[in-house]
Length: 346
Length: 284
Image 1 (spheres, rainbow over the protein chains, first blue to last red):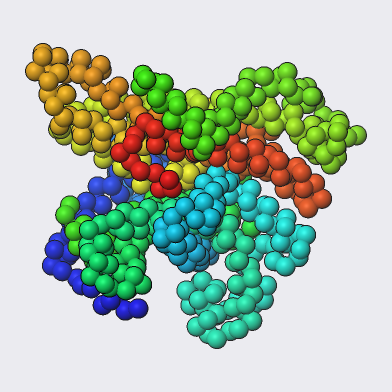
Image 2 (image 1 turned 180 degrees about the vertical axis):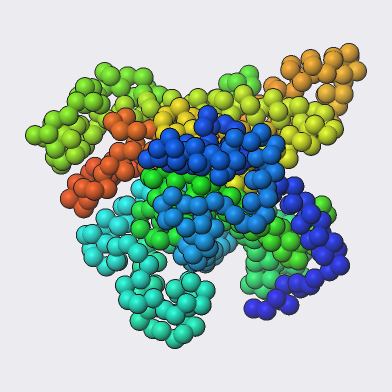
């Protein structure tokens, strides 16, 4: 199905909207920096001790206080904080001994891969189920889906992960436990194993990566799948009662065409609207799911940082998650105006 | 029939809302009476190495944990911990979020713009990650969890109250109140709140579900409640080392979380239908 099918075009108003939206995001990013500054530098009684970790000696804490300028007045600290972050300097990790930003960049592909696969699963399963449930309202499938989605949002994902591990890895032995791959990693292109293995036509690596990602991505997808199915269903129900759909059907257009062309377009809008929100949900979900599945991405990095009181690393993950989340929502908002030009009114 | 009667009749006929209400009611009951209901109330702290990791039996309904403590008893006390955390967290979010939303929605000036932008900033970090960051900054304890969840959740209330107040301001009702001589303070304190309460009640119920899940997540990650607190997330974290043999150890606390969060979500969904007929529920 090509994009022309949905009459997608880039209009001038879209460009203006995009520019406005980008400018509007800048104060939010500045606000994010100020918020994290307050939480990490103003609220704690001794930020230097927090950054130095639990094992630090008083001398080490004092040295850190000098190095990070915690003995300076707050406004100077704030300026320094902004300056450091503009140069992507997030300090050093106690745990790896490297720069936090290097760690984040190294580990991001693993998390991104997990998030993308989970997103794809939840869209591929959630959208069709939502449409069918809306078209066959009050059918058995509709009721089952309703129960399933209410349940999906109530399950603690770390517990679901442990239960799936127990069933599929420990009892049935059909899914591998832990890490990302069982053979040599494919040649580095993006750092996402599935993608790299497919590009280098490395069949065994692809298969192994697929086996390893199955359980964590399904666990991660569970809550977002429920949300997508829910929103698609109500989106389709809203549009099904609109005059133009009734008109088209009265004009004798085959119901199938009406469904595909108009209902799908609407489902697309409600799904894309959801993606921004879901991305935040998934990003947060990776912390516990990577911990459960020993998946070496940012989430596991955050968990290790928690265990070792590696404060700069946790600050780094928080900032990173915030900036990625803001960026994704920015992209989503802009692409929405391409799908639905009415939304280009800020 | 009076409005309240009507609401109750609608409520008791809505199977979803009513089951949610029952679950929540039972949870509160269990939390209050944990000391009486638990077969081994002393097992919150006492350890019995001789009885470790026993499967469910008539003696221990849900088995024992790695220190020989009765899991069923600990789950009941866990309900108390969970309910206290979420109740205070949602309560303080209400106390912060609602007044800010009222002020921001009633006045249309730079200050309300500022409030809403600050709320946006708090929502620009994925909620669970912000809660983790806050809890780590405060140091691991139940108090930090409560504080972290309150700071994370208030913007939702501000957003809802803001939108409702702005809509309400345009109605003839508020105009009439002001024409009759009611001052700004009187309008904000007496006339607006009762008319924006429905979405607040609905959001509170959903917020209870969210805070319970997040508190368990923080406990699981080791930045929330600390052992030997019988918190559900902490128990699941402890149980992982004893899998796959001691399956009951990990299974039952997770089911408890699931049941309770589902109860609050169903209650919230049902209340939305009854209190706010304008919004159609996603699944009706």
